Amino acid sequence: MKKMFMPAFIMLLSLYGCAEMPAYSNVESREAGDESRYTVLETDTYAGRPQRHLLDSEPDLNIIRINDKKVGNIPFSTYYYRNDSPQRAVLTPGTYTVQLEYRLPLHFMFADLEFEGKPGQKVIARTKYVGPSRLEIWLEDAATGEVVSKRVR
Image (cartoon, rainbow, N blue to C red):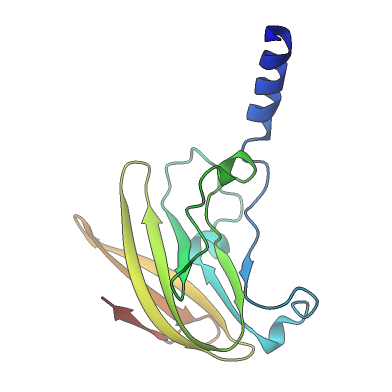
């Protein structure tokens, strides 16, 4: 039994972080091919660093909840994915409350933002370091750069 455990354990560790967590979607899978009919929400982690690494010590911006439905911080998902939360969501147009997590290796912060999604709109979650222990997080339209969110709570 011990002879089988070690190779199986090493194989499991080698699978750690092999793929990106898939995008969250509240659209039926047979209809999701045409994103021009939906609102696409991406974080600047997804848009700005496509070749990010697990141990790069760079901050990550993750989607944790959409309309109080947990879509991120999923336990044990990192056995299969590089991250435990999606950085992209395909949503039907409408009003959404999104909880984002800004994560560094030893620190994290949550922000709740509300926005109105329109068909064909791409929204990017952005961050800006303001000072010691101060950070701004907002959602902006990717095409115009206009801020489309307001802070909740």
